[in-house]
Amino acid sequence: MNSMWKIAALSMALMATGSAAAATDGKVNFCGDLKNAFGPFDYRTRGEHSNDFDLVEGGHFTADVENGIRGSSGAIGGDLDYTLRAIPNHHRALATLAKVAVRSKTLQVPGARYPVECYFERASRFQPNDGGVKAEYGNYLYAMGKPDKAFLMFKEAVDLSPDNPTINYNVGLSYYQRKDYDNALLYAKKAYALGFPLPGLKNKLAAAGKWNDKP
Image (cartoon, rainbow, N blue to C red):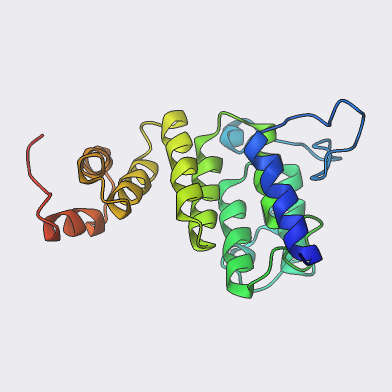
């Protein structure tokens, strides 16, 4: 097993256990301490820390960074690292990090101090009740060709954020891919009732003869 896959295996194990602390023998957490010179702030508290968020995002999470085009202060991985150390559960930054990694076929984006898996572990350790983190991690796992792990993560996400339309849609899509059409229909209808705008899952269920318009 090469070193990159060893890193991935270790960080996957950390995420799977959900361990928030270092081991009892005093070893340092592989994915680093959450203490930071600035923050850390909960992404869901933007209204309380708007000036701090503006400072972080204005310097390190610009439109070019979010779209995966180029870094703002250096390598794009460095800007994403700065953002995710200041705001570990920054949903959009996690999504960008995952997108850049998948596109580049790498487990650690150049300029970032940790493998991609670690940023999800850190976000979950920081705010274990944040369904948005689980959802973004599910998206990453799915893009990495791990639909079963993605499915479990989406289920965790919807348990934490039951009224999020996108998360309900993703759970429904995962059920559809597993040919569990009853649950796919259940979550699809909930997603649409909550305002999810895209008809893809409805169309898939209709094509399979499983859609109905009952409430």
